[in-house]
Structures are given as structure tokens and as C-alpha cells.
Image (cartoon, rainbow, N blue to C red; front, side, top):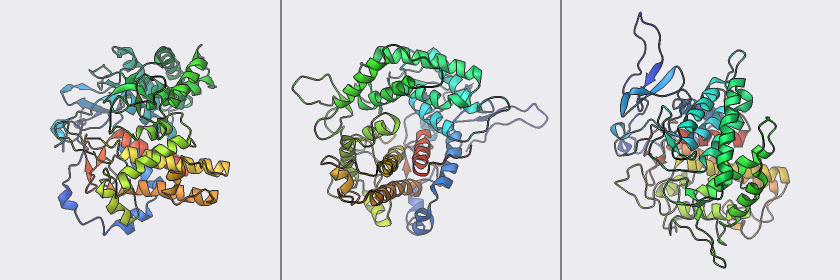
Length: 482
């Protein structure tokens, strides 16, 4: 482990510089085999989600750069992070055996989702000013936007805010705008003025390109993306009713209607498709990614981060397929760890899609992939938010499409709403308990091993923490203390 660089005695204090990976602890799975079963009753079954969220928030903050807490570039130690940079993870090949990917970059999507959680926390404000991490985020977003090449949808930047060779992903400007809207009441006038400029440019881009195909959430294929359309729709809906003095551009109503219609096009009669090509009249939609890409967890994520209603029974039909494929012993894609966890009263954990092969090492594919922390937390949030909806409405969104979803939780058409709420919340709890159980003392990797459940792929993925925080907030209605 490399110690952080600090000021020597007698010298002027300077910022802490943390080399990426210095807070990553390697661990061998074999050394821990057999220890978990002895701990499950005393640890996981009595998990205090709000308390663990407080710890997760601190772990997430380690990946957010500030004036006094910098990262060095692992490929060029003479370069340092700009305040407001959010690295996806402090992992890169030289410090992560079995991983050949470098995550020491700022992804627009990951950073925005992290900023939403920073805004949701009770972070202290400076005297006569705003919340500094949120102001840093806005400033760094502006730097990246100014350097975005070839379009404003460029998805990934260096820790200094320069474009790196990567893909264009049209959900980024929408999520960035949503994050700034969330932060807006907590930032000072200067940051608000800059935020308005960033939002204006993002809206100009979105209104020009919302009808376009784009690289998808998993950065693997291109097409009309359900996730991108959903977060673009949420962005435009929030702008259309904002009370922050942000101008509502012409054409936003037309764009909202087009995105709503576009999302409808993803329904194939059985499930929502993650990606579709141009529709051929008279034919059902098809996914250009081919067989094995659906059902895809990004449909659930489109409801968590976008504008798909949680009561949409087509969403619930898709979610039922997702859960079944990774938890049903009869499924070709079942994760063995989920079968073991079932006996412990926790889980199941969710992956990405049935034909997944990515495990952090592009040269060593694993057919079927592994469960992810963030997708499991997002699915738990689906349960919690749906429970809130049922509690508020006093009824279930029950029909033949949603029946399999509810049947997985022993909920029927005649189940009293109060009982349904309890079972939905319990289902979310079981998933979050699995995430805590398989964490490394609350440190979250990107993935968990599909067979033994140990952390794998890159360590300390920022989005994993943010997804856990969001799920707990949906459950408790409480904020962590920053």
C-alpha cells in the first residue's frame, strides 16, 4: 500500500495526494472460505441500513477530488486531479491483478449519479457560501463540457478534465443536468451562474439529438437506448417545470412527446428491449445487440434514474424476467451464489444481461458474467419505491403482465396492499443484505463472483456506493450526514 503524500515537518502544508489504488485492499477468496456462515445471523440479519449508508457515503467520498484531496494519474504521476473530478474507481491494471481496465477517469454518467448522492446528503455549507463538493462538481462539469470532443455527449474524461478517446453517450448531458438541478439550491451564486451555462448547452444538445441513436449504458452497442431515452425524458420534464429560473427552451414539449413515444417502441410484447434499431412497419422491435442482451437490467435502471413509472406493468414484467434468470435453479443463467444465499435468507443479486461476459478482464471472458453491486441496489430501490407507490395509492398495479413479478414475492391480486408493501420492502432488504454480506467490510467492488460471492473486478466502484445510498434513501426517506 502506498501512503498518501503529506507535508513534511517544517514545510508549508499542502494537499493530500492519493495515488489511485492506495486505499484498495487485495484479498484472496480462499483465505475467507467458511467464515461467513458463522457470521450471518449476528451481522447481516441485523443490518442497520441507515448506519451502513453513513459508512458507504464516506467510502464514496474517497473517489471525489477536492482542493485538499487529489489523485495522481497512474499513467503520468506528474498530473493531478482537478477539484470536482469523480473517478469511477481507483483501480488500474498495475494495482489490480486480474483486471485489465483503467477506471481512474471521470465518466459523465457516474459522476452525475455520485453528485446526486452528494446533493442528497446533509453536507455542511461554508459561511455565506454553498456546499463546496457540489460547487466543485459544477466547475469540473463545465471544464469537461468545454473540452468535450467530438460532441457534448463525450462520456469519459481524464482527471484533469480533458477528453480521452471514448464513445459518445447521449444520456450523459441529461444526467449531468439532473445532477446540477439537484445541487442548485446548495451552491453559491457564482456556481449557479456557471450551472445555468452548463445546463443551457446540455439542453441545446439534447434538443438537437434526442432522436439519435447512441452508445448504450454498458458502452458495448449502439442503437436507440431505453435508458438514454428515459433519463433524457426525466431531464426535460424537470426543466419544463423548474422553479429555479432556468429558461425552458422552445421545442421541449415536442421532445417530451417524442421520447415518450420512443420508449413505447421498445416493448416487444413480452419485455422492454434495451436497444432497438429503426422500426420496420408491421414488425416487432429487435435489439441490434442480438440474442442474449435481453432482458437487460438497464430497463430497471431507466426507472431508477429516468422517467419510467414504477407502476408500469411492462417494466414489472421485464423485472420479473430479470430476477428469474439469475435466481431460478431451472434457469441456464442462475448464479450459484444466489442459491446459496437463499438458504441464508438474503438475495438474490442481479447481473447485467444473460449473455454477459465481462468480469474486469477483457482477455478472459466468463459466459454469463457475474452479479453487480450497483444493479442489485437498483433493483432493491425498485422494490422500495414501488412499495411507496402502493402505500400511497392503496392498490397494486396488478394485471396479467405484472402478475409474475408479484408472484415471485407471494403477492396475488387479492393480497391486501399493506401486506404487499411489507413483502416488497422485505424483498429490497434481502437484496441490500446480500450486498452488505458479500462486501469487503463494506467496501464494494464492481462485481461479486457468481459462484462464491467474493468481490471481484475493480475495487471501490464509486457507482456501487451511490446506488446503495440511493436505495437506502428510498427505503428510509432519510439522508446521510455529510
